[in-house]
Amino acid sequence: MPVRILVLLMTLMLLNGCQSTRPDTRSDDHLATNHSTSAAAVVPDRPLPALPTPHTSDDVWQRIRMQLSFATSTHPRVLARVNWYLQHPNYMHTISERAQPYLYYLVTEVERRGLPIELALMPLIESDFNAQAYSAKHASGLWQLTPLIAKHYGVTINPWFDGRQDLIQSTQAALDFLVYLHKRFDGDWYHAIAAYNTGEGRVATAIARNHKAGKPTDFFALTLPKQTRHYVPKLLAAAALLKQQRMHFPAIDNQPAFTQLALGKAVILPDQHNWAELEVLNPGFRRFPVLLNGPGHVLVPTTRAQEWQLAAMKFQALPDTRWQQVVVRRGDSLSRIAKQHGVTVGELRQFNQLSSDMIRIGQTLLLPSRSETLDYVVKRGDSLWRIARQFGVSVKDLKRWNQRNSNRLRLGETLAIHLSAP
View 1 (cartoon, rainbow, N blue to C red):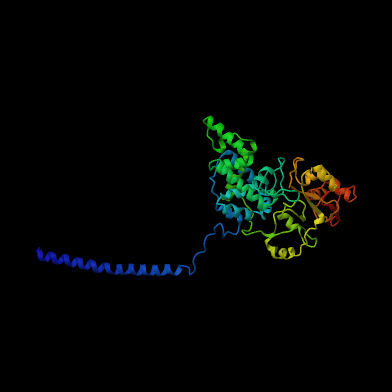
View 2 (cartoon, rainbow, N blue to C red):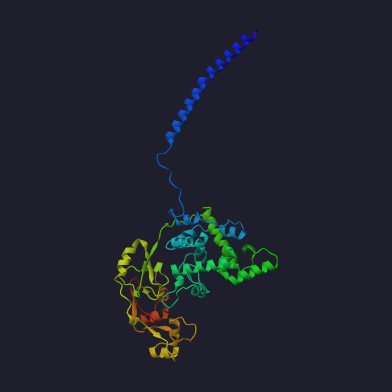
């Protein structure tokens, strides 16, 4: 075949091939265009809602869960406590009920200081969120502060007010103490938390002992008291259950439960107001409803803050006749002051929380009045023991003042309570 004819045939074949592929190419373009149009049609007109953040969540527990940072532990002590929690499903219901007035504030303060959010769970381990908890070692409140630690960090403790049971003062002191311990133990939070429970000396000694013996010095390797060995695992277990959502933590509103109301004067809350709800938020006042020598504020429910603010404007200051202040002068002694004012030395010491008979010139002593009484109306759940503890008096005195032999109370009856025993 001549070369010219061969070239012509090949050219014709190429032209036919190009013509046969053009319809398919146009078809693909058409399909692509239709696909784009279809995809555009399903794009929503509004942006997708943002995922909750710790501060936009409705639940404080979830706010905590989103910020948990301690590593998950599989140590047997931790797993044992996880199993204990799971076997007691109602436990967290009780905890949430107790924590409801306090947890938002605790979380906010931990966040404000830039501390691990796990620290907000420590009152769960310390006191089961019982603000009036009191231990055999004289630790008290949500954070179970001892008198020595509390006073060191500026907590007010006097015959009328115990700041260890005040949410604001106790939380600030506990977090200050934890920050110190964290620094003391070179940034190891497990050591710091253990030291909060058992004392820094024991933890430091245990670390030094292991170090000398060539053993590991992490928390789980230390020889510590039994309570402390299980203390950190309890916290880690609760955090793990919350983080992994393996247990139901009843929701707590992620908003303030209380408002601080300035209280610049000592008062007795009037009977016409339901002051019992304030007692829940202000357990630091030892002789409720007498608000004396406290922190200069009272916590009120946020939902009724305006109502209480208006009521507080009408509170009458506690008359000066209910107590006296005496400034110690040269030559004074407790026995001399007690004799002058018709009280005993024991009463003076108890009323002013003195550990000895030593007083100093210029010191101010608070003297109980022996003539004023408070009328207390018995409410549901009251007992003579509970009322006596509330006002810092004895059951024996309560019965004597009210001329009764029985411990039985009637709902609505009125008891006479002396602000100090006459």
